[in-house]
Image (cartoon, rainbow, N blue to C red; front, side, top):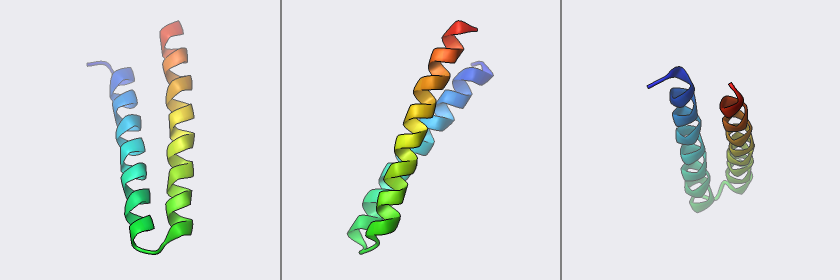
Length: 58
């Protein structure tokens, strides 16, 4: 497995972790932190798509 694929795997793992953490914090009365975690997950998703597009060009 190449370094590019490991990078994509780790990004996807980070997105999943952010979403799970966001859900957990919303269930424990920490709405601001939960929404911030969802925003980070969204940013990582945009980054992942952009990285995959650039990876195809290489």
